[in-house]
Image 1 (tube, helix red, strand yellow):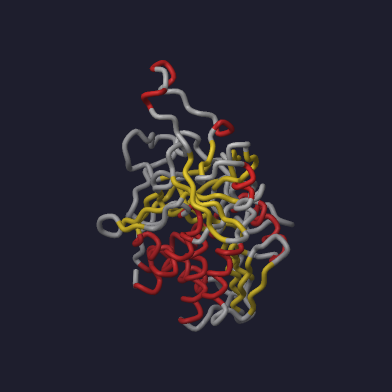
Image 2 (tube, rainbow, N blue to C red; image 1 turned 90 degrees about the horizontal axis):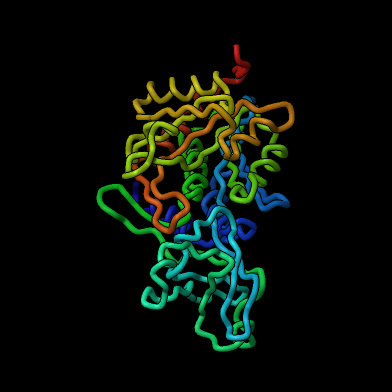
Amino acid sequence: MNKQDFAFLKELVETPSPSGFEQPAQRVIRQQLEPVADELDTDVMGNQIALLRGQGGPKVMLAGHCDEIGFMVQYVDDQGFIYFGAIGGVDPHLSPGQRILIHTAQGEVKGVIGKKAIHLIEPKDRDTVIKLKDQFIDIGCSSRDQAEKLVRIGDPVTFAVGVERLQGDRVTSRAFDDKMGAFIVAEVLKMVAQQGGAVADLYAVSTVQEEVGLRGGTTSTYGVQPDVGIVVEVTHATDYPEVEQKGIGRVEVGKGPVIARGANINPPLFDLIIRTAKEENIPVQVIGVPRATGTDANVMQLSRGGVATALLGIPLRYMHTPVEVLSLTDLENAIALLTAVVRNVEKNQSFIPQ
């Protein structure tokens, strides 16, 4: 990945965007797509929709959600300690002892999630998970009045970590789920434009509030009314210790994007993606998903009279932790594959299963 693209990815991932507070991340994407898109709009939910006009072909919608998991300030006690709730699927095992940032109208406020020293915990309680409602943030204040001058009820909170390079093409960060999907979608629109466009009208959509109920995917698909839709998401890598492969499949970081197959997926579109991968010599992995996928692809498929839908996943280790790990090569291969798929969609192509 070149320096310019990596800088875009890093800025997007590190920009705070818990569900319901996505506009800082949307502004980063907007800056990238304004010079390229024929139209660029934000709807009332906060979804950002970029259009690259085609040549009379079907509407193709690519979607990746830009919201991340996090916390929300809910209560400040008399000593200035802040209690919080989860935004999305936060594991209460992980939060004690973490550094955090509270995102306020005046800027970032640094803090830590307090943790009683092990010396002070009864031996019988040392393996007990502290409930999220009993965890608290310490921002260094000594009173409620002092804390409430800095933060407000409802302010969002994120882990205070960003993108770091590991060995080879591996990188780690919070919030790859799924800002790297929004990154891929934006890059595909830019790449299709660089290659002269496509027959299809291409809608690149950065959706919101996926982590709290697939909300932005539902409304944006209804608004765009695509004929074809591909959702770009993370998927569980199964190539690290103690992960059971039998229930998910063999999914390896660095071995290519993952194409889902199952009831949520349109068979002709699946075949087009696999055929394009072979023609372009792009490595892919396939997983079977016998039910709904639990992603924006589920609501996309069911919008209005139905949408020919596919799901492309990027293998991710340690999902919903501050140390998610993925391969930059997988991102590059996903961009190349989706660019080719969009350009391969024909004017009167049918996606009705036969």
